[in-house]
Image (cartoon, helix red, strand yellow):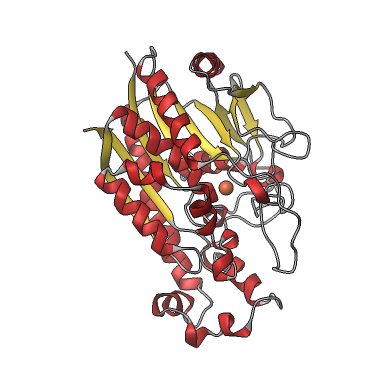
Length: 356
Ligand SMILES: [Fe+2]
């Protein structure tokens, strides 16, 4: 019988940026002529948002947000090092990286083999917002980072999912994006903040979180006047939840020691139409967070795709898979933290789970 534990972290590209520059997306929105002046009027913003923005356009708050995120990454890294899994099975969004016009699978296990040396800053996609930009480590464009994979176990999961009538796709090499897609790469870069090396093998499992906005918007969103036709929608949260349940069952019955990890922030400002794409839906995130901490996974299971899209929670679909897994395994949160923010694009949640 396999041993399994759940983890969830953010992979926000903003964390890679110099600390004083984390509010740049909101600055872009403020320059968008399609957004009404009333939404840009700072005097009408919530008090917490004004406080973050302050008189330095979020520079000081960005430093504090970065430090708080770092504490959470360090905590998860220490737990992983202590747990010593055979691999991390990681759910993450493909943000117009390997999922492009050629093919958009709902889910895909990246059954990469052995080691891979990547150049994070040179290979970043434009949707990852770090291509050619200075990073918080001050690393040069040709900086190299080493990753480790577990093809044998990845194939095991694909086979078993097919047995469970879950028609899982797989790939042995990157389709379009050189290196590793940002959801998985950033997770490892952040869990190895001090660049000691990241020894844990990973099995990335992509989810088409961006759905209607994956091709038209290239997994991102710019000015409101840009309105490409929507693409077909993402897999539903119920299907992601069911995937998590199936993966958990397979992991539990496998010969492996497994870490199941969701990699993403929750509501994203640039995906939240009702706030003019300026701020995330903090209220909905707090409701989901409260349910997660209480172990009320049924609330997650009942969430509709319309609710996910309404709150800009497209990337939260990665966590719907994790919640399905935690329900299947009857695991509860042992430690978690939420960092709500109005100006740094997305709500960051970190969590660790163990059997109840
Ligand atoms: Fe992402």
